[in-house]
Length: 347
Image (cartoon, rainbow, N blue to C red; front, side, top):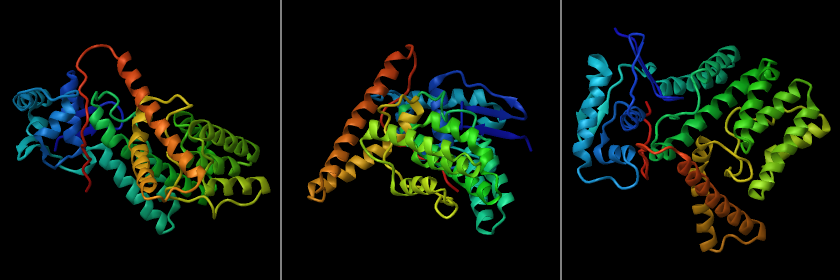
C-alpha cells in the first residue's frame, strides 16, 4: 500500500509514496483543508463555497467549485485524486486509516495517553502525549487563507494542544520530571501570554525544579496581563497555587491533569499572532452571549460582574480591530475567507 500523509497542524502538507505534493493555488488549499477537516464525511457545496470565497459567494460559485475539484484531483495524482469523490450534498475526501491525517493521529495520542494515565502507566502516558505534541509543525492552517475555517476550528485545534500539554505535565509530575518541561512551557506562554492553564503548568514545573521564586514571578506576570487586558484576577485554583507557593507547600494534589477553567482570554494588552486571536474569538463571543443573557434576566447583580461584561465587549471590539488590521496589511491576491462554520471529523 502506498504511504499517504496529510498535515494540517502547520502549513498544509501532502505526501504520497514519500513524495511531497504542492498545491500552489490558495483557494484549492482552502478547499482541500475544508474536506480534510471533515474527512470521510460529505461536505455540502455551500459550506465549501463559504470556505473558498471571501465575503459574498459569487454567482455561479458551485460551477467554479466543480472546476476547482477537478484541478485539485489532477494535482493530487491518481492515488489521492481518486479519493476526492462527489457525495451528496457535496464532496468527500476519503482516508484509508486515521494515521494518514495528523489531526486524527493527535487525537489518538491524547486518548491513549489518558488511558495509560488512568491505568497508572505514566511512562507510556508521557510517550503518547510527547508523540502527539511532536506532530505540531507550526500554527495550524497557517497557509490556508480562509477566515471561516480559522474561526470554526483553530480554537478546537489549540484546545487539543493544551490538553496534550496538560497530560504530558501530569505524567512528568508523577515521574518527577516536570522540571524538564520548563523551557517549552516558557515558550508557549510567550506565544499565548493570557493562557491561565499554560501558566499554571509552568508554575508547577518551576516549583518541582526548586525554582519557587521563578514560579512566583510567573504568577505576577500572569496577573499583570489579565488585569491589564481583561480587568479580571486569575482564577481560584491559580490563586490557591500561588498561596501554596508562598507557603512552600506541595502542589501535586492541586494542579489538575486535565483542563483548568480560566477566564476568557482576548488579545488586548498583549500583542498576539493571528492564530491566537482567532483561537480565542469564539470563546469570547460565547462568554459575551451568556453574560448578556444573564444581564437581560437580571442575574448580573454585582458591579464586578457588570465590569466583566464591559471588559469582554471591549476585548471583542479590539480583537476584531486586530483582525481587520492584519487583513489590511496582507498583499493583494486571492484571499478566501468569510463567515461560515466547518467542523472537523471525529472518529
